Every structure is written in structure tokens, then in C-alpha cells.
Image 1 (cartoon, one colour):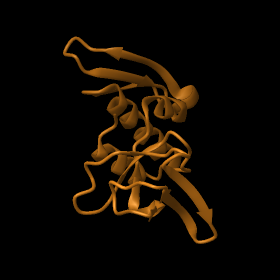
Image 2 (tube, rainbow, N blue to C red; image 1 turned 60 degrees about the vertical axis):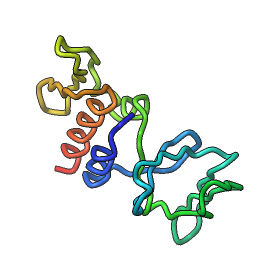
Image 3 (cartoon, rainbow, N blue to C red; image 1 turned 30 degrees about the horizontal axis):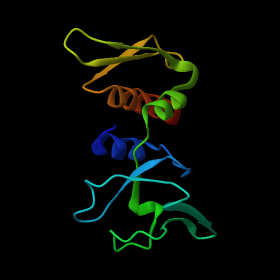
Length: 137
């Protein structure tokens, strides 16, 4: 799973999230950052309002939460979602001899670049950050 630090960097870089079923997220609140939640019509639904998206907790008894605004949540994209965001720039995922994961991409107008991290998700996240940053230029 992507690290919370990288998820926050992705958001700061400009990556936007439209919550859908199966998405994972954390909540920016004291004592809650370590908890990972998953959107599911059974327990957590994304409700669209003119004022923004609210993540509603349906019938959960273990948390004193009814809902949280999307702005207070941080998306933790899965590997498949990160790979999808890379689109046609993605070239390969490999395991290095030191055990790290390498994601190779070819960003528009640039030679192939590789991104190494301790997990495949974090390597994908680093590549997406580069793509988002390149798109903002």
C-alpha cells in the first residue's frame, strides 16, 4: 500500500480524487492517520453535494464518525490505480537486486526514467508525481 507521506505529496502535486467504491483513504485528524478506510456502499459512501463531496459512514459502531469531508481525507491509491494514472507513459515494473521496486516510465518529451522504492506502490507513486509535475509545466 502507498505510504501516507507519498499520498500527501501526490495530492500536493495536484493529483485529484473522485471517490469511488473500493478506494482507500486516511483521515487527517489527531490519532486517525494510522487508520485506513475503504469506500464501500455497505459502510462508507461518497455523497455528492453542491458544497463538495462528503464521505458518509453508514452504521459503523466502532467509530464516532457520521461523515468526513473529502478535504479531510487523503486518498491512498492502489497499485492498479497508480498504473492506470501513468497510462501510456508506463513501460515496466521490475524488482532490483537490492529488493527495491523499479517503475520505468517515458514522460512526454523526456527519455525513459526509473523510480525506485521499497514497495511497488511507492515506486508507482513517485512516477505519478513526476508525471503530474511534468503536466503542470
